[in-house]
Image (cartoon, rainbow, N blue to C red; front, side):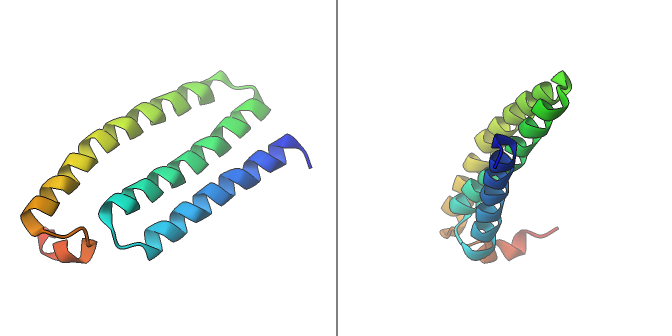
Length: 100
């Protein structure tokens, strides 16, 4: 088994664990953590394919996605904490009244 195959298998495993975690768990902060795990699985596969194709644009894309993900976490966690203060729960079904 080559290192490329192994890395792609790890990438798929990370994404699968994140997907199962988002589906099963009912805790907003844990769901955010599993979404980040899914994103890391996708980025790992992007890095592997970038290395295979020897494209420098992929490295720049991965860096930009990491920056956006960090900004997303920096914004999402305070929003979740404000929701908890107002609603008193971390269960996403408790916030069904927020739909537009």
